[in-house]
Length: 71
Image 1 (spheres, helix red, strand yellow):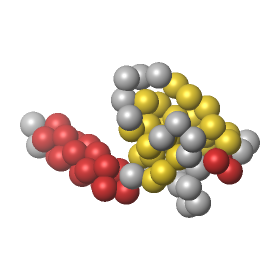
Image 2 (tube, rainbow, N blue to C red; image 1 turned 45 degrees about the horizontal axis):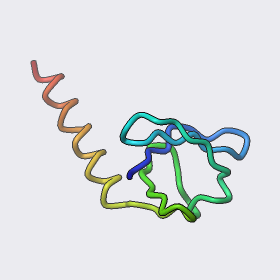
Image 3 (cartoon, rainbow, N blue to C red; image 1 turned 180 degrees about the horizontal axis):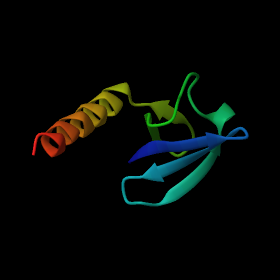
């Protein structure tokens, strides 16, 4: 399942799963360089960055904004 990094504060990341569940994880447990809006995957033990999914979702959001603003 994918998780979106919703926010990072005081060394803790708030992650929102695709099903809407909110999970908190120490930033030290996440891949180095992870930032807000990045997508990660949890395999039960470790967090892994999902750069392709991050890019796909950012592109999808940009396309949606273009459609909304062109009305």
